Length: 177
Image 1 (cartoon, one colour):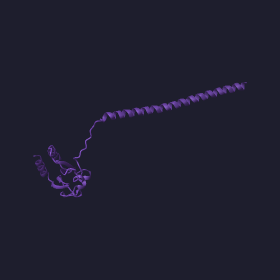
Image 2 (cartoon, rainbow, N blue to C red):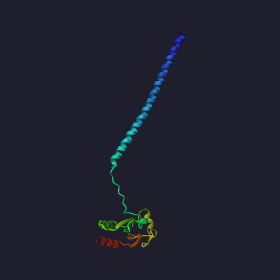
Image 3 (cartoon, rainbow, N blue to C red):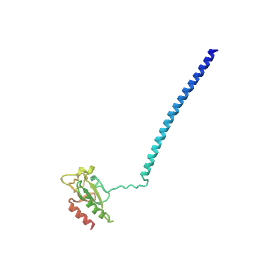
Image 4 (cartoon, rainbow, N blue to C red):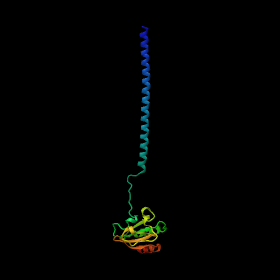
């Protein structure tokens, strides 16, 4: 009988040990699941706040304007207008603001030819800088610029080229008078 009682006590102890270890395992599992859920909630909250800030910073009704006035040298002869002007500005020209003033005044006239601007110091335009100008051409690839130049374009070819600052200013003044 002692053996049976001993076995019964041993089984109860094993059951208690198993119950205790199961509770410990369940506690660890719930702790892990809780930590994962907490991390998920934290990341969700951070994402929500960042997204909310982005929505506040970027207005929905912002209009985007595409400007067509600045062009590349390669586009000088292929504009849709049949007659227009192109001001090719050298990289080191300090009179660009003066030219822009005259051009803005000229553009305010309703029957004015369109003015385009090429900045020689930018990107692909630098390939067209040379020691000697080659301006009265029919192919864009033949164009070369030594300095700031005003081109008069008619029917996709250069009809007139004006190179010096004084001549450009005089021509622009005649346009607006």
